[in-house]
Image (cartoon, rainbow, N blue to C red; front, side):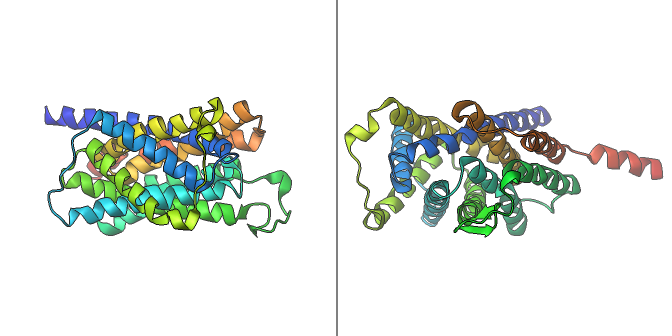
Length: 318
């Protein structure tokens, strides 16, 4: 019975990780649209106010920490998962394309797995996981690199035509997300329920945001929120991508662990590129198509378990 329960949890973990990643892939396009009206800081604060209110409506009860020192974990999660990740990502979107940001952020599974291994949440990374990561990242590069522009120069290019300051900020956001995912895993180990824990993390994110108001000096009007375009995208980011998907991501981390759930983030750039192609008319090249296949193949390979093969070889040897 317990084996079946474990299997069902793992299956649910895969499902929610998959759905969450697909939803998050669309957020890069939504944020890019909103940047025509709002600043990166204004978008971040707006979406998390909506998300926090949404979770309060679902679960009004205030979470009590089991120990006072656990509050530092919630504060750190709010700093890394809300401020660190989304400010870096949003600023990156002002400097490069939505597709490129989603690709650069796709280094998050590597940071999640490495941090989890270093701090002991995961055992040593298995060969199929590492090889799957390499395959997926090869696909990521094929989707990301603008082959027609290779060799061109731009003021913010670190590698001409390929990698600029915007991409560097997005990689930094991925590192921040790697830290956040492992903090969430630790909170799960301590027995905190996902939804109220996420609500508390959002609260800390908003507290950190208040500290930053004198720095970013937001200036918005009610009218900015009332158009179908801005209102719809903010509702998507706040209620679905944040309010719902932070909770589902917490469940995925709880059921699969930070490394195995993190591998699903490889799907984000695939979703972003496809949506950008159909919704915004961006090109979808042959290289991008091959990249999509490699990303999906790497994801599947990294998640497969080969213990039965090794056990069979061991028995044959004996």
